[in-house]
Image (tube, rainbow, N blue to C red):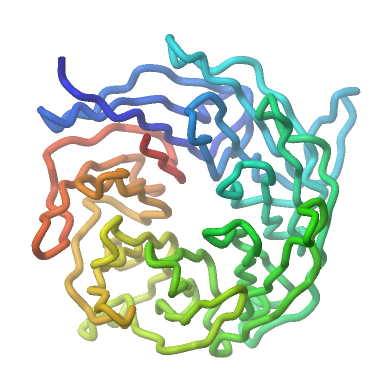
Length: 357
């Protein structure tokens, strides 16, 4: 039997359109195959699947939604869908308000007992306790941000763009594009509450978007949307120390481009970022100290790669080209770390997030 990896893809669209697609990557033949499509959720811009593969979480990136009583309510929604263990089909969704407009990112603690949502236009991050049955409970903690940056169009107010837990689950790092800061929140000794802990500034106008920890746990990398850079921080017990900032673009490129996603290879040797405008995956080599150097740039064979994902074994990369309606498969060349087009792609309208299991 051909080994298959499970793929979940989300896309911008109305509630009556396809928002979530299930697919499979047949690794022996390098094929991508759609297996199911689902609607009933508007603009599911970010997805997470729990470790056991039994529940899919999604944010509905909207300004207002229809609540359980059929009334309009401000802010977006967090959705939770059970996944059937045998058929892999999604069951009926459970929904919670995010108490902020345009939620755009979510993450789980390693223990999967807390879930965090970043509200881009809501200037806030919400924390939800996760029940034993894997469903999020009502949101119990809300942190509001205040501040701005020098970009009058994009930084007139706080814009939390991602919420990322530390490897030990004791800290939450929120990249705020509008403030040029990473806000840190800490778990209390009982694990039932979170409190403000620290704030780390980036270069003015950088616009931090997403964060990723190095597998060693000793470094954190921030991809900065507005100035197309990656900032490397040394990390120790909730404290970030800025080490360096490096461009994600070739020096010969003079056009407009904005970074989106960031990921590190499982062996920690390479860091990957997506460039929207240059329409590429930028590859940075990571040395033993965590420092970065350019290693190459590969076209995503489409327009505006908002998101991509690496397979757990680091052998595959799947890029979602939002403005060309394509999801493209690449094989990672092990020595150079460069993605090589594997000859397969899927047509998905406005794809914006990919999860590989």
